[in-house]
Image (cartoon, rainbow, N blue to C red; front, side, top):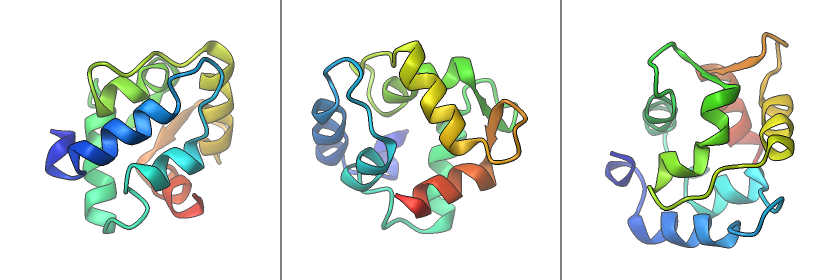
Length: 109
């Protein structure tokens, strides 16, 4: 579970901070949720939790529900937010975010 890696309090605070539509900022979110200061192993654990279908990638459909991956009451991202998040993370242009790309996003935040 996400709370094995991150504190429930940080998750709640971070998800709550972006509850307004079109407000999602992944850099601020990763920082607030405490992911930025985690080890590469922990970042990978979070990646695998978000990779719901275990494909080894976080696809656009999964990105839409990224906040729900942190907490069940997280909102869905809008199409615009989802596409912006994908564009920010998808360095090789294959339309999805791999584990290394995710780690890079976290490091950049």
